[in-house]
Image 1 (cartoon, rainbow, N blue to C red):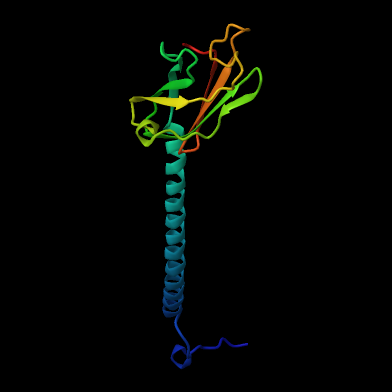
Image 2: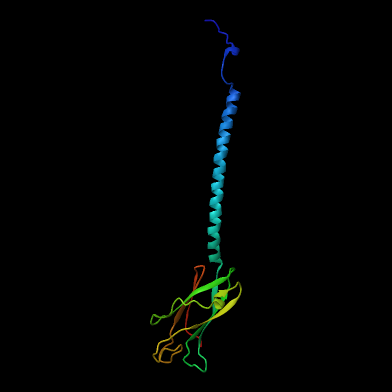
Length: 176
């Protein structure tokens, strides 16, 4: 067998370098479209997460304490039924009280439920306090006073709900 000579000038087709450049251009254009679409979707997802997390973080930053609970009995009305709540906002966001519930624990009597205080009383700015005065309608029995002498003092549970969905509770005997 004899060695054959190849004539490079008669060969037709695309050179390896030109073919590689064409494939690279196609892959780069399709790849960049996919990359930018993916980045846009990731940015939209992160934006949604930051909006959701902002609300959740504000819920966690809210904190209210009961400074004092007073069952008001004035000298003119010895069997008065006013309840005064002294609340302080010790959180890092403003609070808005939307509901107050009170239960007499020994009898499970619901004194009041879902009472929304006045707007001027219900908003508590950061590092501030408010006094909420409510009318707790007691029964007509003679022992239905806050500090009854007919038996042991009753224990009450007061729950305060905020607009952010948090609940704060106080349990104890009345202060008069």
